[in-house]
Length: 123
Image (tube, rainbow, N blue to C red; front, top):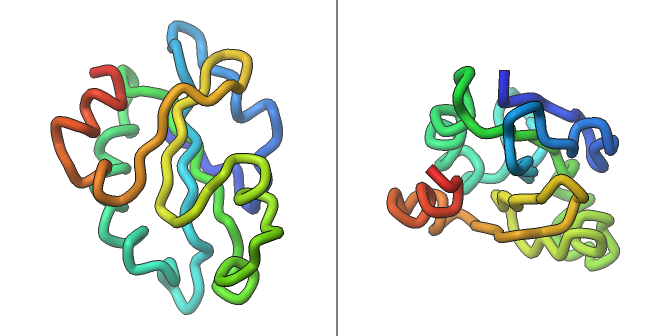
């Protein structure tokens, strides 16, 4: 089960280690769910693509982490995801190597661009 949810930000280090046989871990930053859906419309736009890309036994290891409520993200330059990972917007997916070093990242437009997303996923 390559797609897991770490819960609230920040994810524990145990989620960020690649699974056996996988080269990378993909850290997926989404907004929190408020009122039954993610508050970020861009996150909702890519949710199906992301789920399809990471669900299944031979798919890459994806870890969803929620960055918090709208009020804790919007115009909060000190948010830990902004500081530690340089996340400017959600959704953002960061490919990490086995040591937790960033290799690449995509945001909404890259996720919805089929060929760019395939290259990013190393498919």
